[in-house]
Image 1 (cartoon, rainbow, N blue to C red):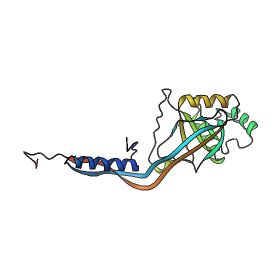
Image 2: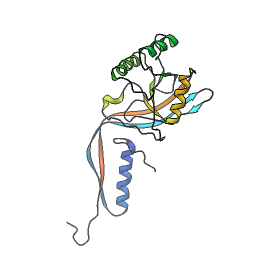
Image 3: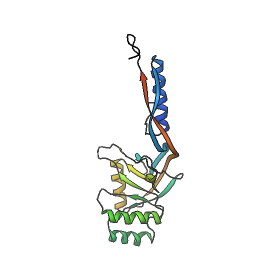
Image 4: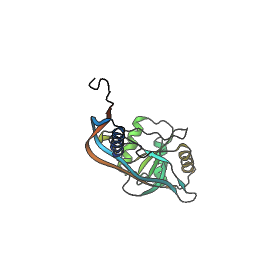
Length: 212
């Protein structure tokens, strides 16, 4: 309860190891930390929030992938539905101008898009400095998000997973043509590694054969 969540290589993980070692020692055991490997970078989450701005406003429940970038302070921008093909992109350009993704939060639908088209869109998001991408969480309401601790996975924009029902409402409002503005503050913090990662090991010494 005091040291969670404990992502590999995070300060919470270090604190949890130290707490556990101290607990074992308080029981009279011989306890120590044994390094099992190195994380290439330390990653910690600071304060974060996200919301739909305006009327009706909605505070969003969300999670970002581990070892990925957050925002540079508070970032506010329009919600834009990710175009599924060239025709949808052309409609978006006609409605929003030549750079429809500039500063925008991209709302990704559940529809599977061709990898080649997604790569093309990613290039546009980079060139136009899109704010980030919002995906839907699981239908159960759980927010599960994996990540890759390699530094190359940090990316250029936040990868956000929003609670399923909230994402559905957001997608519906944008699809109806409503002007929806989003605001996020995501304080994801990196520290260059390598960062030692440890297991907590305690020895319970026997009384009859203490050396065995």
